[in-house]
Image 1 (cartoon, helix red, strand yellow):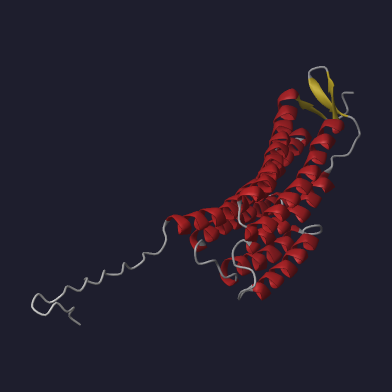
Image 2 (cartoon, one colour; image 1 turned 180 degrees about the vertical axis):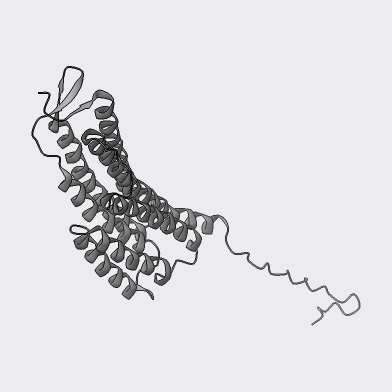
Length: 267
């Protein structure tokens, strides 16, 4: 038993708490995205449904990471010892490959009006995000390059709605910055540019914590941006109704009075 890898109870609890937080926040955002469909205009319903479904699938894969962590260790006295089960690292990759591209595509759908100029940009964005989903399964470097192309399309090429351009751009900005930061963290971690400790247990625990923080940045912030972007449709609609355009009042024409001498009405 002494020759097996062991970690302390505090290290095990820190990783488990991070994974629980990821699953809880992602599941809650998925519920909010789907539930908000009932209070938004028709144009925003499909993007919110697609984003909520993508978040639900990512949450399911992320829960597999949590279950794999619990099965990989068992309590042995005052520490946790490995059981021989593998950590579910592929579940985390699948969560990113499915969830992040679909959330970005949903953000693109909420940034312009359907049926108008810019639909071809949505097709380009969908193709690039499909490529991002594939490249993220194999290489962090290729995923970063593909993500840069998707961010360029979202930020510079997608025409924004007139009523909500500022809100849409703010949501897209925070989503792109958050995903970029998470990808940079994973990139630096893959090339050992982020210190994770010198012992095997420290490297394992710190690596899982870093990947957990990256998951929070990849899903929670973009999911919240998508929710605010979808709800912005209702805000803009209500502002338009509550502040209608001023209507010019017609001046009343004076009533003709009869001439006191002739008794006839003047022309």
